Length: 371
Ligand code: TRP
Image (cartoon, rainbow, N blue to C red; front, side, top):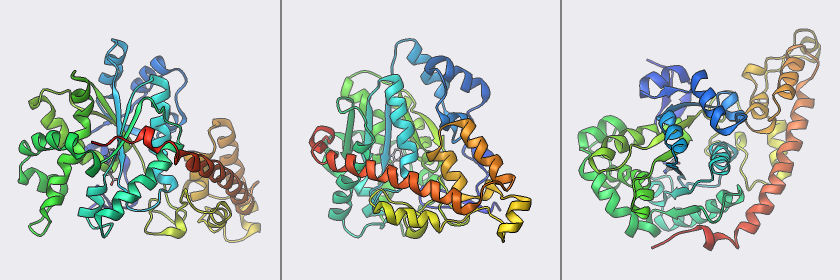
């Protein structure tokens, strides 16, 4: 038995990402593919250079079609179960980069139905209002208002439902059980729900009246959904959706991903910046037991949550990151100093993000689509 679990509902343990690629049947983003991406986009995004986006389905095909003059649409989403934290921003930052580079549309699904059905939020009204709260964070990322469409499942149901029904008819209960682990006790709304998450894969084709390739940037735990959609696609006359998968952002504690259920080890976009800084100052590091020992033997950046934050979100410059890595290993920088610098960067980021989030309130109508 593996000592980790990755499903759309549960992520825990120390994840073997290479093995996950095999188990899920996805493909590694290898050097050859990185070269192809670089050929099309120029210098690689740091999340590609550092293997944060590490796995894919049909990304090579997406690039080929794009070069042939057949552009793709982006699709990603969020389950509105609470406030957004930095772990959620990771794939959104990359999605924004893709939108900028390729100048393509983005369809952003807010699954108010999902979070109600699976019980993370007690009422549908609450998950619906959280969806609009969370949309502010999405807008604050700077997506192109003319090319970005955000919707909640319940407020865009008239358009999504007919697509979902067609996917649902092609998906048996035994497949859904095998892919998602549903049981007899599972409520029937949850069992139908994968068809709702499937719908946006085909939405651009429906809206444009033309088969449109779709690329989904998302964390790897969402991949089970794409198995269902890719099986259904050709039977419904659509292209199979492509996907590009990222790893999880670790929490500020020891091991495990950043999770809203552990608020002290997660930095929320709505945290007062100073309070977020305090969370960083209490983070788990790879430091030695004493200052003397650390100066002599160095720290271990590989297990350090603070170093991970620099690597994944707060230091884009590879040479500066390497410098920090070496300074830690050599005992030249101590954890207090390293944390203080990160805390400052996080506070600054939050101040700016919160300003943009405030401004986003006036832009909601421009971004949200309803029917
Ligand atoms: N199920 C996802 C969650 O719980 C939300 C979601 C819907 C999503 N569609 C998506 C995530 C597409 C990534 C890509 O957060």
